Image 1: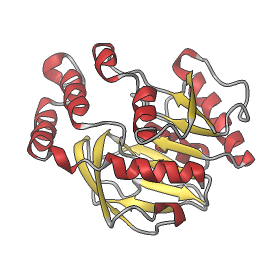
Image 2 (image 1 turned 120 degrees about the horizontal axis):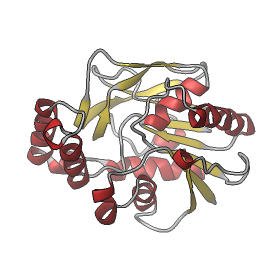
Image 3 (image 1 turned 90 degrees about the vertical axis):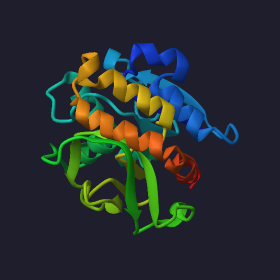
Image 4 (image 1 turned 180 degrees about the vertical axis):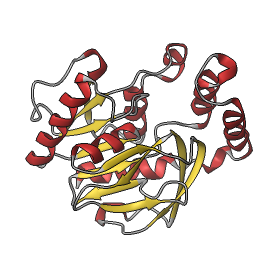
Length: 240
């Protein structure tokens, strides 16, 4: 099975050598136990799109610093591709920005949340599970880095992950769409380094006090990140 990764964000250049690109981190996560899938990455920010929605057997959309409501040509083109993938019944996974752009492209709503930044460790309640989610417990803790939130999922979507901070943190549509607001591919060391680079003290755009609180939580509870559990869900989704 060949899975196409639509890479809509670029990792900080000083972190790529150590951790890889967003696409490479997803590949490492999904194929951690064994090489179940082949992957092909498309640099969407560089306008390098697949020839069509049938080029791969399944698809993943990564995170991005951009908002789905931005009037950018590649976002419009990606939205059309999402609809083509959906109409063809190809499995489609969205992470963070990917979660949001799938929601918007299929008729949902996304906004910059009044609740502000969500950073570092975050725990979601898991319910409404479908068949391939049998490995998930009632809660899961993953790393997050976002302001925007899906405030209304698409018609026909079932919300399975939520918290008081984020009411729609993950949804699925039948057995062909799976999304997650968190970053299962972000592990503790990477998240700490990324947040430091994005903090105001380092010339970034995230308030320092918010970054400091998130990093403290990461250092205090590094073993809480349950990325391997969601990786198993991803594998089951694509093999379903």
